[in-house]
Image (cartoon, rainbow, N blue to C red):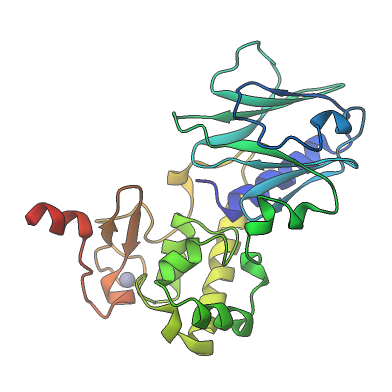
Length: 279
Ligand SMILES: [Zn+2]
């Protein structure tokens, strides 16, 4: 899934290419693509795109009268669409402009969860889905992170992925941030305190900035395997910091990857999947 660095760099590329483009129509290609009833997308017809911003993992296409929030979910992309074919592959919705290419929301796979929310400018933060987001990942200080850490004791990896607590991070960045912070993905946030929060804030910044620096060199959004990192997607490989073997705890829809030497004092965490098979 595209996370903060991928979405942010994509927003910057789209702003550069589409700033000032006048919307002629918004075309939902599937029934599920447009998630809102008001304001109608037509309120933005004939107006020029101010810019493309980001909130959490949402792209925000900002017109004077409507802000379109776009979520890519797992396999979605917002693609520059030169052809504008009648039946685009994996097409979900299309923004058509008076001149130049369109923007096509696609989603690979069968889940069909990517979508577009039309929001009234000025009310975005008070309206679903953005009203459910916690503060931006890069906005935290050790003190402002220590407070929800203490108030919501949970596993660090789960906290980092929880968009209600902290917006913009996903499974990959959660893995990388825990590794960089040298903390177990299963460490309880309730025990980290301001000192632990300081370590995590530093790791968030370093990890997100590394991802952004890489993503900004690209002409388009990276795929997961291309993204920089030490542990995510590298199970069985050597840790670049200490040389230990990267291990994993697997769940049905994702994998927590970590280095025992760097993060758990050498302890190998119980793998749910494996232990279940052994029973
Ligand atoms: Zn290591």
